Length: 125
Image (cartoon, one colour):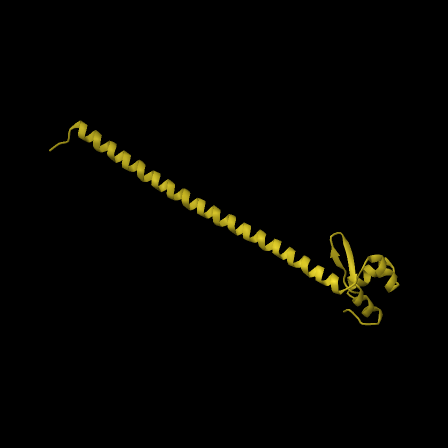
């Protein structure tokens, strides 16, 4: 039994329609996977940003807590208390024989108790 031209055309149209539906479904699935991957990446970036922000907040809280318990000295105050020049301060700090400064923004401060211990003769190396 042979198919008529009309039947073959209907069968071909049906096959094309089925193929188009299959391709549409595959494209939709691929788009959904891409969207899920992009959302996961965005969530990871957001989580990393949130963690970085939390670390900054924790550091600021630690700095504030230290400020309440320790007296901070500016560079000028440190130089006057230790009776050394700015060059000596930097050389001794670099050598590790003087307490390290704490950088707050663009400024450096020293903890008074550490400077007092250095003056009393406690070594820092």
